[in-house]
Amino acid sequence: MRILVADDDQRIVRMISKVLKKENFTVDTAFDGQEAFDKAKTRKYDVIVLDIMMPEKTGFDIIAGLRVLGIKTLIVVISARSMVEDRIHALNLGADDYLVKNFSLEELVVRIKSLLRRSANKATNIIHCGDLVIDFSDMTVRRKQTNIYLSKKEFDLLMAMMKRRNTIVSREELIRAVWGSQGQRVSSNTLDVHIRFLRKKIDAPSSPSYVQTLRGRGYMLRKP
Image (cartoon, rainbow, N blue to C red):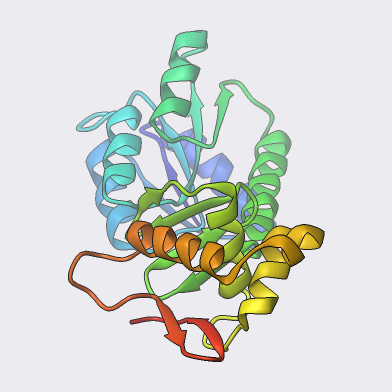
């Protein structure tokens, strides 16, 4: 696990780095905002520990800049700024946690490990098919980082096919997965209508469809 510690107070950086290294983390450091931003956007980190008030670039600027670039590295803010407004601003920009100086180093380690555990658990709930992503932890669907809003039935249809992507799923299996015990009263035409709506939402214009029709056999979700 690699962590970037960014603060213009070298004493604080040394203290945090020493504790994290004892926990078997690999630690990089930065002493101004521009250096921190350059490292964060060009190197792979699991966590960034970030001060707010730094020369060259503030922590707020760094958080906003990384999130605009689509970089989702976990960010723990450490700051002398204790106003609620500052905490809210940092979290709204995309920070994952906020600690006010003088915090306990032991608490910082615990917060980092907790964020890493939650991140690992969430990752197990995410399934990809090409650039189509379904996150079962919060029931969201994205394509190329753009959220796609599906109805409950459309989501259930996509979920049933995503779990068996690149495999044919029969019409009967899809109806059973989406409508359950009421499936006996659902016509094939109803399924076709929902498939059509789903395709309109997840497929890019003039591109092959993610949902492939296998006549007489069912449907298959696969990368176009």
